[in-house]
Each structure stands twice: as C-alpha cells, then as structure tokens.
Length: 297
Length: 290
Image (cartoon, rainbow over all chains, first blue to last red; front, side, top):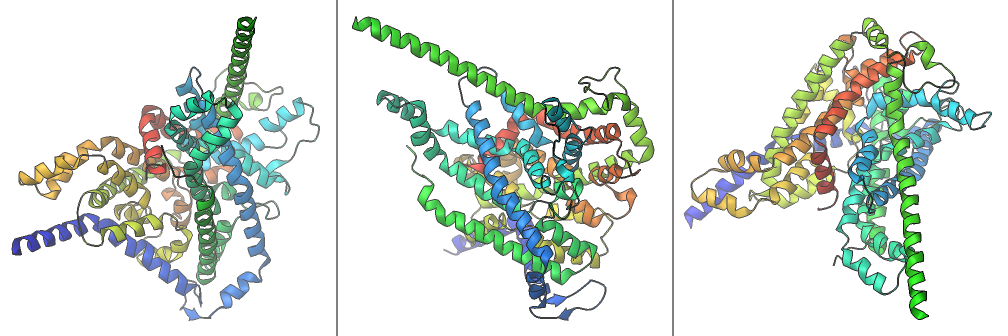
C-alpha cells in the first residue's frame, strides 16, 4: 500500500519533470502574457514612462478609428476569399495526384516545392513577377494581347487579389493532408458504387467529398487561424499600400506596438483579433456537426 | 446482335477512358509548369546580366551565365554575416525545440501523472491562440531583461516546450511504440529517463527529423521575430538583410535581389529534397490522425 503510493508519487514527479519545459513555458510565454496583455489593453503604456489605467478608452478609440475598420476589412477579404480558394487549389492538386497516372511522386514534389520557399525570399520573387512594366506576368499578358495589364501591387484594386494569387502557390501542406485523406477512403466503396452504376460525378459527390470532410474541416480551421495573422508578405511587398489596400490587421498591431510604442492600444487590438479568431473557430466547430462526416468504414 | 452492342459499348468506354487520361495528363503537366515556373524564374534572373533581365521577348535560360549579381550584392551588404547570424539562431533554436518537445511529448504519450489530460487539452487549445495576444508583454519582458538586439528572444523560448505543434507531433509518434517495450524495460529496472533516451528516442527518429526540418524552416524564414528584436545591421538575419537590400539604392536591382533570395531559399530546398518523406509523414500525422 505504502509502496504503491510512493510509486505513484514518483511517477507524478517524473511526469511533471518531463513536461516542465512546456508547463513553465506555458506560464511564462502564454498564460502570463495573455493576462498581461488583457490588463495592458485598459492602460496607456509606452515602456519608458509609467503605466496609466485608462479603462475602456483604447477600445473606444479603436472602434472610432478608420484604420481599424480598413485593416479589418482587408483581413476579412483575405480570409473569406483567400482561404476557400487555397482549399480549392489544394484539393484539385490532391485529386490530380490521386489518379492512376505515371510520375506521381514527381508531380507531388513539383506542387509542394513552392511551399518550401517562404518568407522574404518568396515575397521578393513575387514582387519581381508582379512588376508592372518589366515583370514576367505583365510581359506575358501583353504578349497575349492584354494592352493595359493591371499594376498589381501598385494598384489599390489589384493588390489584394495579387497577394491571393501568390498564396495559391503555397498550398503544398493542404494538398498533402487532402492526399492522405483521399488515400484513406476504402477502395471497396467505389467498387460497390460502380456495381450500382454510379458515374464519376456521382462517386465524387457521394463518396469522395463526404469522406474527405474531416480533412476539409481541419484545413479550414487551421487556414482561417493562420490567414488572420497574415503579415510578412504585406509588410515586405507593399508595406500595407497602396492607399492602405493591403494594410492587414497584424500590420496595424505591429505599427501601433512597435513603431509608435502604444503598447496598451496594440494589446487591445490583439485581444480584439483573438476574439474574432475565436468566434470564427467556434463557428466552424459548431457548424461541423452538420457537414463533417466522421463515420469510417 | 446483342453481343455486338456490348462490344461497341466497351470499345467506346475504352476510348473515352483514354481521352480522360489524356486530359488528365494535360492538366497536371500544365499545372506543374505553372508551379515550377516562379522558382525557375528566380534562378534564371539570378544568373542574368541586366541586359538579359530586361530583354524583350524574355530570355528563359541565361546565356552566358553570369555570377556578378552575387558578387555585387555581397559587396553592398554583409550577407555572409547575415547568413552566419541566421545559422546561429536557426540551429540553437532547433536544438532547443528538439530537446524540449521530445521530453514533453514523451510525458504526454507514456508517463502517467495527475492532470496530464487537462494539460494536454490546454496545450492543444494554445494552437489556436494567435501569437499577437502574447507578443507585446513578451516584448516588454525581453526589453526589461535587456535582451533586445540580442539573439536571446529568438532562441530562448524554443527551450520551453518548443510549441504545441511539435509536442503533438512527437506524442503521436511515441504512441505508435508498443507499450510492452517500455514496460519490460521498467521491469528490468530502467528509469523513465533511461527508457526515454535508450528506447523511445531512437524509435522516433523519423519524427525528430520532421520536427527538426519544420523548426529549421520556421526559424530560417522567420521575419517578424527578427524584425521586432534585432536592431543593428550586424545582428540582422538573412530575411532582414534581403528586405533591407531591396530598397538599398532607391532602385531595385532585380538580378541581385533574386541572387540573395536564391541563397536564402537553397537550404530549405536542399533539406526538402533530402528529407521529403519525413515532411509528408509529419504533415499527415499531425493533420489527420488525431
């Protein structure tokens, strides 16, 4: 009895010791800072001077700020249009790669490569491709007979679509997840459907898509969370311009927090973003019962 | 008569099958060209002289191949230093992530301790937390510690668990090891640490490779972290250096810009080609088999 208790205590200590890096990290880098930023969001603070409690004033200012609504609109545009398009692209690539054709590993590699190169190097490449007068995209468009191709990153109207087009190249991870989902679908289901005389279209909508819904669901959840935090492309390629047309939410947080040292205001912005992401995530979780098929044969 | 009709039907089905296949190949090859093209263009531009870059119609393959873009860029900014800084940060952070996430992943997969399941749920839910919510207090903390303009803010956090994604990935891999292997070792008098180092770690090498790769790429390409914490040029990483280089002379030198971008992209490309299978494994395991 005593021995068993000692053993259990030893196990508990061991477990916490092994998990301690993350548990400590959770308090230092997640829980603590979360509480601190919630507190800061009700304060005025610029690191150098003392902290001053100002109640809800940051939030009032935010909701009255045109830039906030502009950044929120841009970010929602990027999420609502970009995420489904990227999922569609990833799904098409996965479906193509799931057919019985030769050279599949090669095609899969080619589709994945652009996702390997990310960050600033990728951004610079696309700045060059989108360059209005000598860039490759417009050179080709003019060759195809488009006389006045868009200015892309230089145009208020085309800057967001340009960034979305660019993002369609980086869907390798989503493709791999869809591919794994496709390969999990039991082949017998298709064979049974064929015996019943089902065509390609019918099989696609009645078997492939329903059984792929868990992957679609996962990719959408992660895609939405990630897309709300878009930063590097916009910062490097357009610095939010032209005319704030690519001024995304995190750029606004960055400017307020690290350019102007408005730590309280930036914290309030961050908390609003957190709540928006939480809302969208819960919305998706809640809706999942209606469309995600969890039965597996 | 009937037999003939069936035969004709089979024949037409065969023809339509071939047609479908042909269309499929056309689509997949066209998409492959489209997907391979940007990177090809980066490489092509990096090795062209300025006349070739602005030539119309575009020159696809540089002729002659020139290296002046690299030497020019290197003469303007200390890219070797940026490379060195990036390598130091990436390697030390990745080591931290491997050590701490494997310890924690092991604790979640195999050890029995009170509160484990609750902690696990908490850990998973932090995956949904946007970094911006914690970014500002962490910045204030590091400012007060005097760590701004050092590599510490970019490295030290990696030693504290390394992030939920990596822990989850390793836990999933540890769970695939048959428990009896651990149990028999315990009977033989091995401590948990022995089991972890001698039995568990060697068995999850593929997962550790996946974590190492993802972490390497993440840190190598990181932009926001260095942007916030590194102030003086001699501390810059490659990402910051390239960003600085673009507007360096007021006019963009495309060949040189593509040359430095290519150098930044090469390590990631090389790792991908060497370790492709770990990539795919890592993504599928965290993506689906929760």
